[in-house]
Every structure is written in C-alpha cells, then in structure tokens.
Image (cartoon, rainbow over all chains, first blue to last red; front, side, top):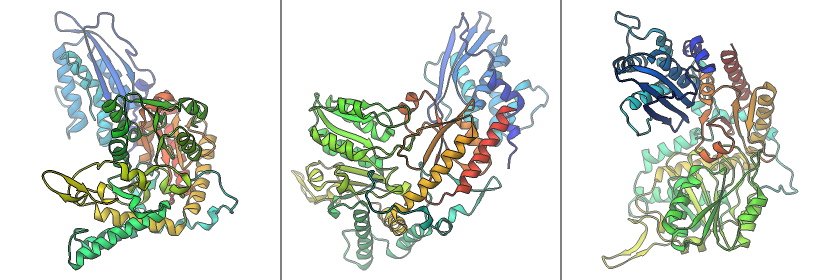
Length: 152
Length: 420
C-alpha cells in the first residue's frame, strides 16, 4: 500500500487550501487557455502576461478541481512568474517526466525545485491527469491554442 | 420497487443470508491495497455470481453456435438457451408476452431504439418530450437527438432539494403536445425512487407514451411492467449481476409493432429483395445481426439468481444497509448527503466539506473501498446542486454493514489527511 502522505504532501495540501495567484486574471493578460477534464469535472483557465522580451511577467488561474490539480496549478504559477517562456517549456517537460517516467529527481541541472512535491502522484496513475491539466493548459495558452485542453 | 406497498407482509432483511450470497461472488474474496475489497460502486456496475460466469463458460465450452438458423445440435441448444433467457426476463418483468422482450446492448441502446424507432417517426415541431432533472445522460441525449431531428422540444421537470420530483411542476408541463414522458425509475445519482405509477397515469391522461429507465431499479426490487402500465421499460444486464454488453427493452406489443426497425441486417427480416424487404415478427424485428448469445444466457442466469433470493427480500435487505449508511455518514459531521428523498434505493451520494470527491475516491481506494467519484453521467443534476461532482456509494445485495464501516473508516482517513 502506498503511503497517502506521499501523495497528499504538506505543500500540496497547503496549495490546495490556499491556491496562489487564484482566482486571478492578470490585468495585462495576453495569453489564456481553458482546460477541462469532463469525466472528473476539473476545470481551469490559465492566464499569462508575456512581455516583449518573452518573459512571463504575470500568471494566474481560476476554475475548480481536486487537491492534486489545484495544487499543481498553484505551484505552477509560482514557478513560472518572471521566467522566460523557454523555461516554461522546459519545466512542462520536466514535470511531465517526473509524473510519468522512472527517473531520479534532483540530479544535476534540475530545474524543478519545489515542484518535486508532485513526485508522489506517480504512484497513483489515475491521478496523473489531474496533476498535468494546468500544465497542458498553460502550454496551450502560450501557443495561443483556443481548443479546450483535456488530459483524460 | 413499485411504490405503494400492498397489505401483504413485507419481507424482512432477516430472511436474507448475506454471507451465503457473498460466497457466490468470487471477485469479492480479494484484497485491494492490502485491505479486503469493499465494493460500493454497484451503480456503475455490479459483480457477477459464479453461476453467471459458469453459465457463460458452459455455453462457450459446450453449446456455442449461432441461433435461429442451424439445423445441427449445437445450434438447437444455443437457440434453446438464448430463447430460454427471454422467457426468464419475461417472468422477471411480469411482461404479458415473450415477444415484448427485445435483447439490446444495454439500457442506453434500449432508449435509443425507442427514440429512433417509435418516437422519431411520430414527432413534429410542435411536439414535446418531457424528462427530469435527475436523468442519466442516456435518458437525455437520445431525446435531444430526436428533438434536433424533428424540431420537437425537450421539457425538463425540476426537482426539490431533497431529490424528489416536483410533481406540481410536472403536472404543469403536461399538455396535448406532450408525446413522450421519459423518466428514471430510480435516480442513479440520488437514489430517489420516483412515483412512477402516478407519473405514468398522468402522462397517459394527456395521451403521452411513457418510457422508464430501469437501469438502477430492476436489480434492486420487483418490477411489474403490467402493474406499472408504462409503454417501454429498459434495463442493463451488467448492473443486474449479468454480463456487460447486454440489456433489455420491454415494450408493449402494440407499440413495438408500430415502431420502425432500429437497425437492419440478418435475423430482423422475413424476406429481402432489392426492391423491398419485409420485417420479422417481434421481437426479432429489432434484433438485427447475431445477438449477444452468451450475454443473454448470462443475464438469464443472473435473473434466476436474484429471483430465487426474492426481489422483495433483496429490496428489504438493501434498504436496511442504506439506512445504516445514511445514519453513519450523517453522524460523522462535515458530510453533506445529496439526495434525501423519503423513498430511496441503495445509493448514497455525498460531498465531504472542503474535499474534492476525487481525493475522497483515492483515499477510500487506499482503504480497499471502491466508490465512484464524478458527475455520474448526470451533469445537469450536478449543476442543480452546484457541485462539480459527488462521491457515491451504491449498494448491491452482497454489501454489509461492515462494508459501510470500512467506508466510514476511509472517510475518517480523508478528514485526518485534509484537516491536518
């Protein structure tokens, strides 16, 4: 039996209880996308303000979901603020790998920082789609993809 | 299940030996995540007793052949078993005639068959179809499709906060334009047992045809289609201890005769030429192609199983466990039960304060308890209660008070994790 405390880490519970940058649509938002997992009902909008130098100056989200999807979205907004768009892309891939692949976390060049609290989700394959929803939605926003994102 | 209990003494749960029943279900004897499996997701699908599994295996091991066409021994045996299952289903629903039992893929296909075969050719732009807020998507979308095809209008009966139908509003919706009233016998997401006799009588008063979705009703209590006096009744095998991919549409013979075939193919025709084809008799007119033979045989075995236990005894037993569950969840605090109608079948939908149903579902699963978390294919109903989803424990005849205790222990774990 997996230890539920690895899934429901203190940091995750905290971000679920008090999501950062939520519910918020930055005033100068210039990229937005909609993510929706219809079977779960998890639904988020991710909003970003990217400046002329390709820096994510502000980011916020709204919507509602389970603890895992909400905490992942909240942590994501913290991690991406004031980062170049290229870093967002890199983090997207690292989070994806963290959640779906066997790999060591914390090796050289690790970028993830606080996001490693999501590691526990890997042991719950049915919940990976929860943790990835906000990330896919963020990526769709940066690509100006107007299709609703779904990770089910 | 037919409300208005008669003067006859109600069977009590004492007559019901649940341990003997549990022994019939091989799947229950396993551990999940290191705990004994507690299966409380019967509203989604029920487990299968050994005799159902054996009946299917026996068919494939010794009788497998196509039905209605061979002259050889196996085909004869397969046809006898397949048609025998139809007789079993006829008795189960107390239908007047075996020709009224149409084998379909499930309740969903039964509803689509009625919508396309009987309703669509008769519906015009001025007509109305009435459903309720608590319907499963399968009793909403087929009617939306017909409305789109014909220009007819879908009307929706609202519900009260406790999950009972607003019968006054229903009366107000009925008029001479109402052609169809399609209602769940039991709500899959709330457990409400609808006052279907009254609904059917009121619908007939305005000349509407009545369609009952019995998916959550047929496995849990006696259904008598003649006493109900409805026009169509559907249920699924897999929720009734039978195999998946199998279901039943009962239709009054007169209505089925009026209906157009739903699908064309072998078995449903009498003669075929390139100029014109003619249809087979009931029920074969609606059974195009090689049917789910093993499915029918398995369903027959499942119905024999529940019938031998007694549908009234099953209903009484499940009701006792439901009351135990309702009380136990109520005592916990911080849990809101969605659906508190006075007449309920064994379904408890609930929301834990401050915790999303999926987190509840994962934590329960870690305790070996299988419950459903989601919208239960009833999105309009979730919107009515302003929740994105609920957790749902749905009972079957093998569930015990100990199962409910395990659920409650799981919910305490939820609180422990989320309150820390």
